Image (cartoon, rainbow over the protein chains, first blue to last red):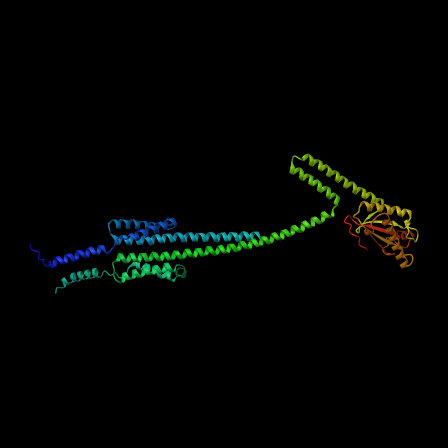
Length: 127
Length: 332
């Protein structure tokens, strides 16, 4: 039995190197599990803050990107999934902030109106 | 070389070169993100109220700029620029929210101040009202005081009876009896008032500002004497009866003469006559503490001293009777 190892053909070496490179390229992007969870919770927070009412465009965009991120994850396109999830997160966060600032502005308007009415009332009462 | 072959070769080379470098001259999304970030940084509200959010956007923008400088693929630069742009928007909304919250807080403080001011004003008005009411009630009490005490007492008991009747309901009959009693008391009071009036009429009393004035004329005294005649004694007895019925009342006895004779003689005569009336009243049981007396000589004539009739009128003793309060009559 011939047990001597022949040095491999240079062509074969090149092919192995190329293949391993391609595999490494794929494997260097891990599944963005944590990012997916963070984005999902950001969307839930935005929805409960009233994002659907006060920032419908950002809300829809966040939801849409999250859907696409899930699809990319299913196809093991981890890089796309991460990017989409990250964008969904900032969209959701913007929607949440927009809802909060709109509510605060509304409260300020109501407060100032109350103050005006109170002043008027007092001025009427005491000449 | 054939120039006809050079052109396609150049084109191919250009295509290969551009594909290789793949470095775009600019990226519109990145430009937008840079512009938004610059604006936000220049806005004092965002820079102070959302400093943390703005810093985060800056870090993302640096990453996008870095990727652009390294000539990374467009999709990655776009992604990083998008994240940076949204984070700038987040910073802007955060600042707007905080500004509005500050406005709410300041309006709240102002509202509290306005309310406090209004309440203080109201309290002052209420105090003034209360003081006014107090004054009015005091005035009402004074005027009520001035009215006849007997009448008031009967009115009060009638009122009492009415209140009891209303409160007890079934004791209505009792209340009616009470009311009758009260009416009877009221009648009694009226009767007493009439009696008093009759007695005073008998004494020929005159109502004046100082009080009831009963005048004992000259004829009730012996000429130039202070001794009371029997007619005078009768008048004084009536007065003594009157005082025994109205133990609260006091009397001021004032003696007067005409202008005939010396001043000191007249003064002494007026004093003696007043004192003689006082002595008679004390003798008939009127407490001496209820009597004050004074002589005025020929002062305060009530008629001319140029005729005998006028002089006779001036020779007199006046008895000024106090009201129920028993307040002593002030001398003239």
